[in-house]
Image 1 (cartoon, rainbow, N blue to C red):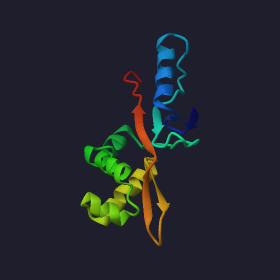
Image 2 (cartoon, rainbow, N blue to C red):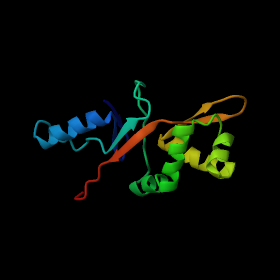
Image 3 (tube, rainbow, N blue to C red):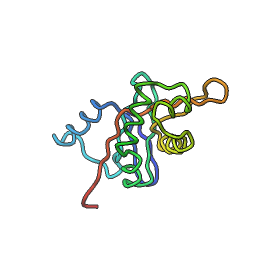
Length: 140
């Protein structure tokens, strides 16, 4: 598991199995929870990558807004259809390219996708995170 830190939250990139094993170890008392323990867990879209994505949001509300049902459908479309450019994705998604590009930049800033250089001036959107898990401490 690769640990990332930032001012407001710690991040850990791991598989779901590693997340589950970590959680069960805490529940069974075999592992203590560090106050600096991860708050966001990320499962990579490509399990063969050695370095997983770093997913971060400015706030829980910003994360929830970015991961709206419409935007999750867009992420699924990118993963399933693997468009070669933003223009191709705009046609597939039936969305204006400029509006779509704004959403893609927000996804990219959050670490949910990357925009790889394609043919000519094109950029190809690639989904980097398959799953994101949030931990919310309701008593802090």
